[in-house]
Length: 58
Image (cartoon, rainbow, N blue to C red; front, side, top):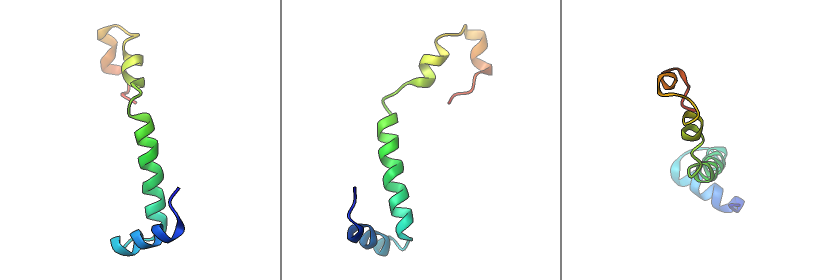
């Protein structure tokens, strides 16, 4: 967790509200956690090649 003082400093440096720094911090942690997971690839492997065109990539 980032201390409030550091959040406010980064927000002031970047010219954005502190909530933007907090949101970006959380999003980066979430993406770092999810990046090694290959959910879409595992899902697509269960279907024949002809079906891949109709499957969403999420």
